Image (cartoon, rainbow, N blue to C red; front, side, top):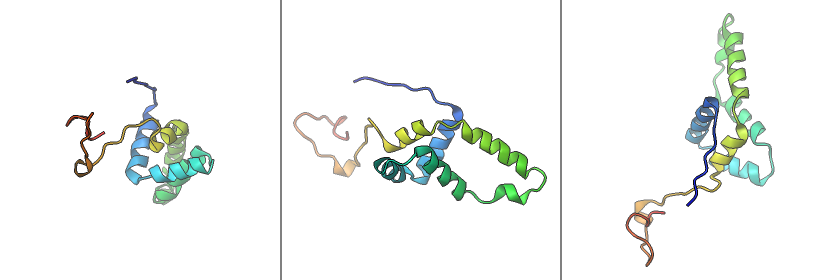
Length: 111
């Protein structure tokens, strides 16, 4: 079994956590199958899902929006898309779905 590691910026990990929590896996699989740009799809998801927080503060709103945009530009969207789609991932089955075969052990039966 080989292990691959990829460095990621903190902004990428935070965005990935947000996207995974929002359940965007199916959206990214569909976008990949339709050959859509991952960056455009993910940026649209975060842009349209947030409340209008920047417009409510006329003094600091534009500053916060500029900071948010700067940090959003640092997100590696291809890495987020790859991670959400589950390329080369291992998925665990629910314990009730486990079927033991001749080659599996209790530890590997859930793979």
